[in-house]
Amino acid sequence: MKTRPPILPAPDRALHLWIVLARAFDAVERHSRASIARFGLGTTEFGVLEVLYHKGELAVCEVQRRILVESSSTTYVVDKLCARGLVRRRPSARDRRVSLLALTPKGRRLIQEIFPHHAAAMRGAVATLPARAQVQAARLLRTLGRGAAGRLNPKGVRHDHE
Image 1 (cartoon, helix red, strand yellow):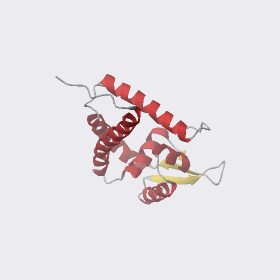
Image 2 (cartoon, rainbow, N blue to C red):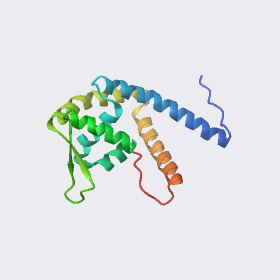
Image 3 (cartoon, rainbow, N blue to C red):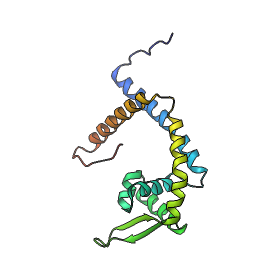
Image 4 (tube, rainbow, N blue to C red):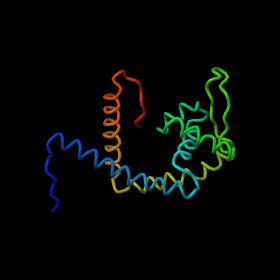
């Protein structure tokens, strides 16, 4: 018979949640890194390819915002992907300060090959939770992410947590 853990005092509950969340993220992230590494890509490289695959041409700053990495890392990774012929960069017709990124045909073929394998790996990583619990966990984590972002950014600037 399983016993329920005791309800911790509020400050300890929050710290416990943070530790559990960090450990769960680390475990799932290891699945992601292993899946991506099989194809000779780093997680940021994969993130750029994946967001361009699903969203189409985007400004560099939008790619950066969506994959949650620092500006210098994004520039370095985009340069590498351009050199490999997977991504192309072009100036925006509306604003010359903005660079737009898009997949090349070679990049599209690569991500089309990789993405189904990666999606299957991620499904496997979270498969210990039944479907209903996955939906509930996503809803709770989205609420947590938005609430935490709102406490850092009370002006209401939008951050993606989906």
